[in-house]
Length: 175
Image (cartoon, rainbow, N blue to C red):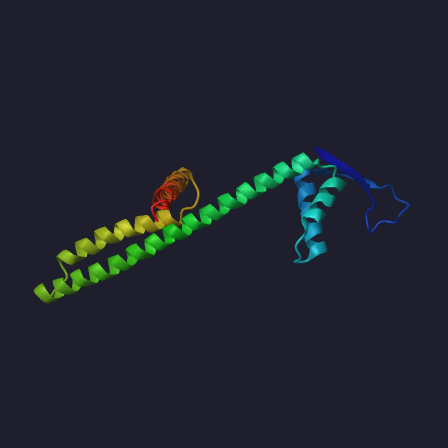
């Protein structure tokens, strides 16, 4: 949907003919977002203000409620992805610490036993390659592989929560 309005150019005299400007729906959303941000300047809006704005824009209460539900779902999804990303980062960090400790031991053992680096370098390189690949996957937050990993993590988390809930119900009567 395109919205149009006659505008007068600010640097032209009022006697000149106004120009017509058309806005796409996306442009309207961006302009209104900027205007609301400027008006509130860091303050939050109440639900009443949201309802008033929706009313002024001829948005039905049903559409507004559906949009709020969708927004809440998107926020929940975003928070879940942030938790998932933090989980992946912590797993990478744990693996890096393990890599450092174990490979330091192997390098020292190799140096003490043969006074040179020989077999320990193969372990360091092989494990380091695996760690580098894990790091690359950890920081890759787009694509089909990321989505699959996220969905597997989400299902695993939901199953864990369901199991915990079931166990609490089962154990609660006996407590």
